[in-house]
Amino acid sequence: MMRIGILYICTGKYSMFWKDFFLKAEKNFLPGMHKEYFVFTDAKRLYSDKIPRIHKKYQEKLGWPFDTLKRFEMFLKVESELEKFDYLFFFNANMRVVETVDESFLPSKEEGLLAVEHAWLHDASPTEFPLETNPQSKAYIEPGMVTHYLMGGLNGGISRCYLQLFKDINRNIYEDLSKNIIAIWHDESHLNKYLLGKKVKILGPEYGYPQGSGLPFKPKIIILEKNWYGGHAWLRSDKKDLIGDNLIYLKLFIKKLLGR
Image (tube, rainbow, N blue to C red; front, side, top):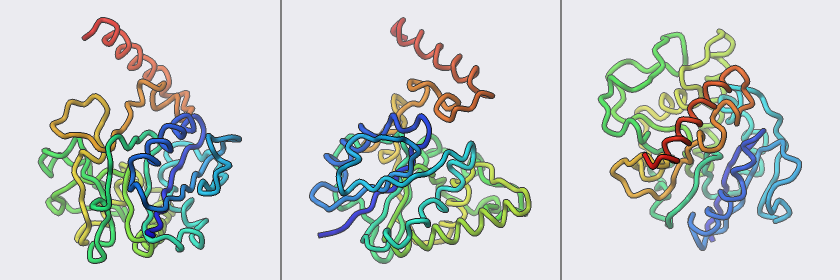
């Protein structure tokens, strides 16, 4: 039986998303295959964390943007455990598998890796892509070189290929940090650079569908709207941006209340 490793980070308040993610993934993601979950968290308790297939790994909260920028470093801490799987996939905490995702999801041996087109940029001109523009960064992409902009919230592949991605991108991130450079969209910027020119399985926005967006795709995996869960700043415990997020949340609540 195919062995699937699922990587999931939920430090701080993001642990609120775990239960529903797990239940939906168990039901809808690659049903019939053996799945194990590696949950990087500082939560004292998680839903069903006594299940042997759930591997709870302590991870302190690093603060923004390092909670996302250093995700590959987190995964490499358990490299020896991850090597045992056929495929590995990372999901953002606020993703939900809402429809059956069968084995056609898996990249082939020739592709090795999988990524998802960014929903909000699926029909954008490449000149609109938010690429890293600093030539000193390892995430820099020359204008005109990219035809698809890939989201950072869901990716994966054959374990040996994906583990190599961890190592290479983590090295590039630390080379940037040594020069006091943080790419514009953090690990997502580095992911787009790393996959540039490689044969990769690219899935459409139905695999990373923003909740309530109205985009013309039938969603299989949705991205929950964080503003309905307190907002980015509240989830990150970032006091600096908390007022702005609360205002956004309040406006959305009023619109829903008025049926607009």
